[in-house]
Length: 282
Image (cartoon, rainbow, N blue to C red; front, side, top):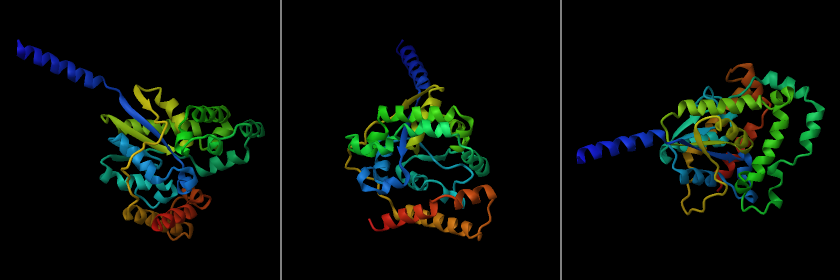
């Protein structure tokens, strides 16, 4: 009898475990604003937030084809950082971003509808309302319900116009692909964290709500004495990425026209220089 009860309990336990929803945590990064101390949201804070979740997988804002290649530096510096610290923090890093063709996006930007510009100009983006928000950090402000609702309103306007949507990099399709990439490669993982620019969070949540997952947005930074440092390995990776970008811009490294124009029309070189200088001196 005891043996039968044990087997039944084991069956129920396995069944319940199998039915557990995957937990998806969404964390918005702020790219170069992480270096501005007035926002109280550093890269160390970002890493500490991830550490408090203890995830199995972290999905970052870089495309699979660019990850670990000469193109890596074109993407936000925090993506390379998240990849570099993954072994130490005990998670697997996944590149999940998707980017459209530069020339298609540029043409749409040139034809951007004036009525859409007028509509979105009436909505103040959350990053600009932080100083009057009373929030302890920009993280808290950007992950609040009111900020997420404001971004939703902005991107509803943008996504419902085909030209504006393309101009913003096929925003609807990009966020859909990010979710598909992350979920398809994280099957079996219990806790998964998506770290993307804060503008993505509300739209990625909408995409995730289509799936059988539990979506979690932590509204405040954790208060922890534990802090993950920005190691020399991270700085060296940024330096390598910076060197690659400079060689690409000088045509010492040959890449396709799409990424070449993305790089030379971006501010990634100067941004990487700022990150390297800041963390070498702090």
